[in-house]
Length: 221
Length: 100
Image 1 (cartoon, each protein chain N blue to C red):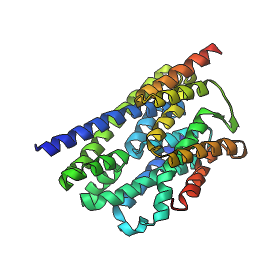
Image 2 (image 1 turned 180 degrees about the vertical axis):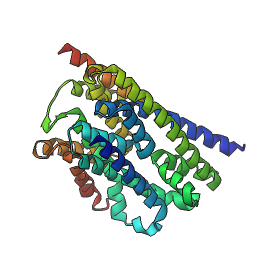
Image 3 (image 1 turned 30 degrees about the vertical axis):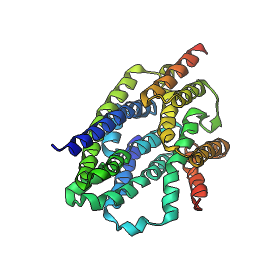
């Protein structure tokens, strides 16, 4: 194993392990929203894109319609298509391998792959597959632990699980707020959500907040 | 309804990923589309913080969850790792919940 490869393995594993902990929060949030342990685990196996999963169960938990939950998850998932466009020429795979590559195309696998660029395209490919499969394994194991744990705890509010969910969202958005402009976007979306909440059916304010993204992204700045 | 949400969400999210691996690069090269797309997670996740932390049905309700959110905010400011943020929020919220 070359030096570059072991560095790539280290990057991939540390990301995969850290992200695994989010899986505990997802499993707990999913059960708190009313999904069974089995359904929560299937979410992580089949949907396998954290923010979308959190959004789907979040909309359900807030009493929103099923369609709102699916739409919110889909909108949060659109960035994976952009990642796929960047990763496809690098991986150059067909058939079942492409299905597998698509399923593990997420923030982390793309992020680690891109970060390996100085180590060459082989390291980028390794980074993608190692991180993707690593996150897949840990995310699913930890989802089960979180869902199972939450199920045995009982009343979510009594254990603070109902606050852990918004805290998890805050934790997911926080690292993205790298510039003052992005912080303004986040604050505007929060104010927007507060303002429209009394006027829209449950779940819709979340989808409607995409308008804030459209408004801020319309012109170049 | 829960099964429909689970299966439809999974199918949609996979389709989105697969499309990315299958379409020519120029299809999504539009600059405005890309700018908006990078902002969408920020807007939606921020709205979800409100929807989960401050909303009950269609009303703004300030309760024990707000105390939990404040703790999460403080933890993030102190550069705490993700598990600490979530646990701080849960603990604070649970304490306030039981005090009431």
